[in-house]
Image (cartoon, rainbow, N blue to C red):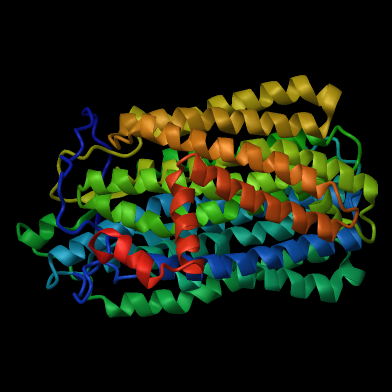
Length: 586
């Protein structure tokens, strides 16, 4: 592998899309046949999603238990505000190094390496070449970032929350949480490699061990270290994440071929990978700008009454649970999209993206309707105990309802930005002279520019609304800004060459939105009948699910109609007489 400076020539057109691929990457092979090398076996999608959903749900449940303990032990006060300012470090590092930027860069890179391995089974292993070229630089950069965050903790706290009454505690917690940057980055790199190999089990389990580490320290040391125990637990949990992935990654790497350097002028030399370092910049800027919404909330919230930042944090944690399942969909399908784009199959990639947009919207909208209907009872059920009182419940529930307006846009951005960055990954083929450098094309920076515009909307709405509405104004700014960015990114996919059929996509989104509005109204009515939080949550949740299913199927939303019909057929199988009335005996 080699590196190159980006060329100054205009970007070339994308590869011609195949109109009728015989077996698109990610498609299930015909029953009774073996899939080609590198392609998933039949049923892969269902199994991968099931494993990922199960382990992610376990990680989310443990994370929720972690937040419940924080609320129980420390409530919502100056101490938790100080910790949550320090929490900004891992909260920023996780999307940059695990969930977003690292995956955007390395899943397409490893996917391209695997495509080259399939093209030349007897040549040097491109996967090992990629690891040798990228891992040492990554470790050096992560160590430097971790050290810099620890040394600059006082300045970081002053920048993020200048109104904190006790910045010393926030500085101490920030120095502890700065240690997470190195293991987070390693976990993100190893997880991207495993997902590109269609190995989802270990990457899906990282948040299980992460939260177990936090809980172990929090339960054992909260009386001695106070809120600092949460910061130490974050550092311990991050080390467990990297340790979990090291073994599976090593086994995958040993299974490959030796990374011999091909002879100059040989066919294998043209198939080796060339690293484009500046391709990192647009991805990193986009991710940091997206995370800057949290910085704005913490900055503006630090001047509001004590506990406001904590209310925002608890509301965000609950709201994001509705988005987690939607993101799982594109987490599983992302390697398939990246593999299709690496092979030049734009038709398969477009079809997969359109399907992901509909499925993600259906999942997040039913969750949004549930939160809109049941926010007070959910917060009371989860948090209202110990130092977390009824006033905290009311404030957090109100913020959740405003946050939820932006959840569909959050999920759709997660779907759209993955194929966008996969079109031109951080590496390219050595025999592809037309591929220009990653950081110079203006289109590479389109997602970051869209995020900056959305951030401007967030700041404007927050500054205008916060004096009169407090935390609700900050949540409204978040929802308005992220929705603006999602609209711009849909246009960006077309500019990038992924020709999604916008009328079809928007029509499906409108049907799902109408079903969610009706479900939220019905759920709010039934949730308000019982006084007990548990009964209110259950009754409201069941109502939301049933009404969303009925309206979605009635309005013709394919993402809802298909599962509903499958459930109906399973519950009411056709009789022998009914089968005779169906065409062809079906």
